[in-house]
Amino acid sequence: MLSNKKRSMAIVMAGATVMSAAAPIFADNTVTENVDKNYTVSAKDSAKLIEEVRKALEVKFEDTKAGANVNDRVYDIKVDNVNLTNATQLQNKINSLTEGQSLKVTIQDKGHQVLGGKVVDYKIENYKTAQEIVDAVNAYNATLAQDSDNKLTATIKSTSTVEVKRAKDSTNVITLNVGDQHLDFSKVITSEDGTFEGYEKSYSDIESKELHTITVKNADLQDITAEELFDGIRLTTLGRELVNKVKNGYTLTFENEAILTQEQEDSDDKDKPEKSSFDIVLSKANEKLETISVSSKNHKLVRELHKVLTDVKDGKELKVEVLSGDSRFTTAVEVSKERFKDGEAEAIILVGEDAIVDGLASAPLASQKNAPILLSKKDSLPSEIESEILRVLGSNLSSKKIYIVGGESKISKETEEKLSKLGVSKVERVSGEDRFETSLEIAKQLKDTFKTAFVVGGNGEADAMSISARAAQFGAPIIVTGNELDANAEKLLKGKELEIVGGENSVSKEVEDKLVDIDLNNKVERLAGENRKDTNAKVINKYYAGATKAYVAKDGYVGGNGQLVDALTAAPLAASSKAPIVLTTEELSKSQEEVVELRLKNATKLVQIGEGIAKNAIEKIAEKINLFTKN
Image (cartoon, rainbow, N blue to C red; front, side):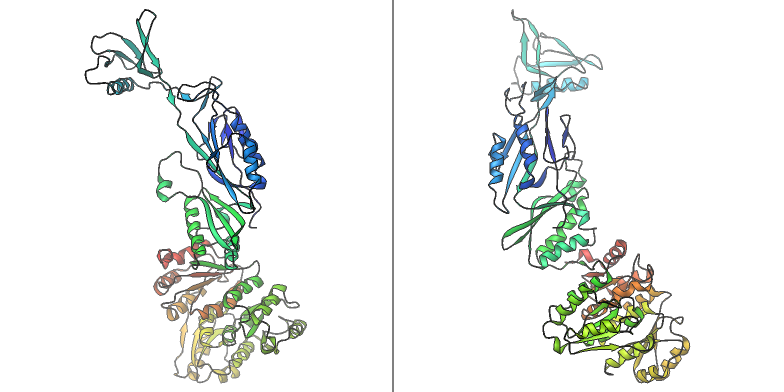
């Protein structure tokens, strides 16, 4: 179940309040504008509806002048197009519904109002202007033959009076005033001796109108707003839960679709509904298991949500997807699930929950070892992480391996021993005395098969995240350096094609000069901007022209560099799609906007990693690549 809230509507009859759950649609016999006319109610919650129908059937006309008969019912109520004469019939039909079955109750006001304390089928209208009286006489004349003796003339005598008489002989004269009740000029009133006295008053019919179509369904129903499922760009956590059910074998269909088009929304129609709505039905093996009623006053949002869910129903990919859990651990699990089916991984890369510096260089190792990056607490392995390890490694654990990246201050020896008991071939810790040595130890795991290496500063976590997907794609190590390049790093990097990511505050000019000396071509390019976002833009500009997908993760400006952990776990996934990671939290920098528009114009999908990224940031990327205009 997605929600426990129930939809409630109501109908109120003349002289009797009729409520299907709570909220009044009529009050004091006056129709409230913009009523939600179509909705669904669970069979188990239909008792109030049945009682309201019983009351509705008791409301009858007490005076009639427009075609109805006294004692006729005011409301025409049908069940599946069959007239209903009493509420017990409705009760019996609802009781006979099998699981998943539904019936439709239509309730139609034949046209009524309460006048002088009586329920009537007519309305009284008065002349508002002198010209209106003249127009009424002319309309009457138009119904007569050309040579009829009964034609009338109407002469305006003042702003508020009109003289009406027979055209042939100027007899049957009356004076009408603005504010008088409409007359029926075809019905002459005479005295007993035949003297003309005037014309009968006219009474207008009150138009019949369908007020409600209520679906009663023998199923659990939920009532939620469109905003709870969708923000206009992305599905919410609740929306993603719904999509995951479809991915896990549920069939999604729609019922009771009452969605205003843009044209209808923009119209001046006073009777247009306040809300757009539709029902989502989830089924398995042709059995309807769940019905979710969705509505909102934001008609555009409902239209867009319906379109997104139609794509889901038709098996199409979402244009904007969110991979996120309720913690950094479960987010890492969601990323892993997106990359690996059951038993597909050959290894696991395990990083401490806040060990960004230790783990930032692990992306190339994860890609080379065909492994997800997962996170662990220091002294315990979260249950969701343990479950994911077992899922992706599958049953043949003896051929699989777990790599722990970082020292015992991040993942304890006790946790390492617990992992060993899972039955994998080996649990290996990859770490050094500090962040610099750890990056070298990871590089050594790559078996010196790399030709290119990226160099970042000791405090350049965001720079490393920008390049991590590219490094993972080509198995190129990310080497962390301090103010000086130590001998071990120099030995490892000598003869490689080297590239610096980050400015001189991160990797000094002295280190750059040293790298030039050992570079294969004695030429080292530096990708650096004024800040981490601009550096991110430089990386995307160089490496991702023509990318068809982009990942988006927090930039670490808000909440600190620890927020970069989402990007760390996503790097191997992005690498598998040859896609960049755009780092942003609240908004794109100008350089990011420009490069996204220039380089990612072929992208047809955005994937957000983790929560906490502002809607306007995702919206701006989508706008720059014209995401929603692409098929």
